Amino acid sequence: MQLNGNREAIIAGLETGKIPNEFRAAIEQLLSCSERAETLAKLAIVVETDANGVITEVDDSFCQLSGYSREELIGQPHRITRHPDIPAQTFEKMWQTIKAGEIWHGQIKNLTKQGRLKLVNPNQVGHPNNPFRDDAEEESGDYYWVEATITPKNSTERIISYLAVRQDITAQKIAEEKANNLAKVLEDKVNERTLDLEEAIIEIINSLARAAELRDNETGKHVLRMSEYAAVLARGAGLDEAVIDLIRMTAPMHDVGKIGISDNILLKPSKLTLEEFKKMQTHTTIGHEILGGHTSEQLEMARTIACTHHEKWNGTGYPRGLVGDKIPLVGRIVAIADVFDALTTERPYKAAWSVNDAITEIKKECGAHFDPEIVAIFLQNIDEILNLKEQFSDT
Image 1: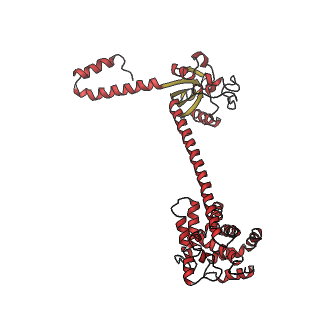
Image 2: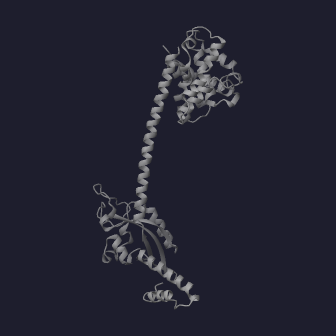
Image 3: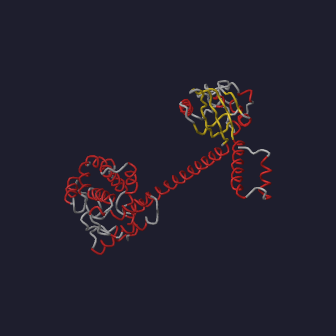
């Protein structure tokens, strides 16, 4: 709706009071509608094609945006501005919609005349498999984005043409692309930092585990074997591979708290007194404290293992006397792995048990020291465990 030359007279009438008050609201609304219509008309980019998609009319805005003259566009197929980035399925769906007599609405990236010259075959108009040349770098003036509404025009129940009204949204899409690129850069940086942090955490875990080994009479192969045993049990318990890897990585830290136990207790070659044993038991809580205050899943897992691998299924373990499934699953898994390896290896204060004797002990403690389900998994996988024992033997 355009008021043209009458607009100024109407506005003057409103300002001087010559227009009666009962008409003021309606006239002000009329002026507002007119302004919106004129604004939309200025923003609109209009293209008309025949029923076969051949361009029959364009406005000046489309010529300015695409870089073509009116003469260059009239008679050309609409796909003259097709951009290689837009999949053929988009246009197939568009044609299905408008040929069915329905209005199609969507966003399309188009090539300018300048951009078309960078295609492998510039004269192959709108072919979906016509990419840019390898030596051609796309620049901002090579393309534009539009939000388009295409309406079929009918005559005697037959579509005779299509009218496309478009709005230039290039600046918006460029801003979105820049925002997405920035988000991708930030995501890559975060992932890079996360990887660096994970590597540092793994190094911390390995360093702490080595420090604990140096304070004890246990060999480095003990923590390697028991962590592999724990991985077998974890897989048998149905845990996913990521959790299994996490257990394998953190199980070696089960006794890290022994760093805080005095040498006269830790290295004593004979049986500990009751008082000494109570001191020894504190290595679980010391380990928990050493590994505390961190939010990484590796150190959280290591902390749980350190604090719970001496808990017993019947509640007689330490440090908290947890019962049954109140003991975290990783603690129950590491308990069997640790005890089996400790029984079957020589220590200064004892000879190595035979494998059969150790298995008998595990069975005896089923439901007392150990979770019956984990014992069952242990027995089901004993051949693999014994292979690992041989593979990582001390000799």
